[in-house]
Image 1: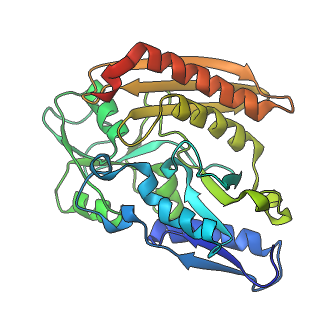
Image 2: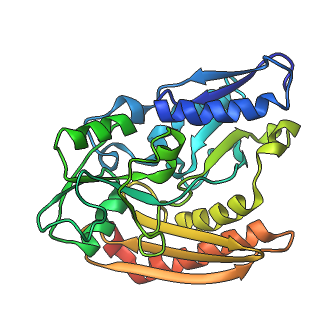
Length: 309
């Protein structure tokens, strides 16, 4: 596959370039010097900043242009934040490698408050994520949710300008940008499960390139097992930005524990399941995914149409 140049497709945001640059450096150790480059691709999700994702089409808006470039051969692989990827890849594409996961938790940033519970009645909490909104409303229905879109720097600037009293951001993105010192507190991932795959990166390739030798050094088995379970739940719940889904898997030796939840759009009702499985065999990834599918289907059966509002 790599005869001249391996082209890595990536969004052009500061965080995306930081993430893809790290992957580029790792790939470069496995291929000839100078053979790896980044191709910046602007997605629909990047272009449309004045509306919520629930209004304009959901998760695929951050991946579809990159995937089209991959299918057409303009790039050789893509680096995505796994939480931004729909439950299924387009025909002809696969997630070929998942590196070790960063911290999957959500962080609270504020000049004053170190937790959602510490915020006074009627305080303003900034987030554009439906999951974060509904989880916050479930705990604190009195809070005013301020929908904040934009990259990490933009949302931090809006906090500093007083548009919200606190905001919620992924810890992983802050850490990768060297901003891990900013959070005043962290949400418990058991009580408030993050988005499926949050904190993990996905290396996407064409099916024919999925076994390329340079991918091997990028794979991290515990992360692969954990996100297989979480994305199994995402698949069962037909997750998109229109469905408030949280999933959190932990791998301890050969045991995988998974928590799955979905909430009604107003946050009033929450449906949860938790279970564990042995993922120590050769079919561990299949077992993990099947557990996610089972828990997701159970949550979906209980929540029904209420999950869609």
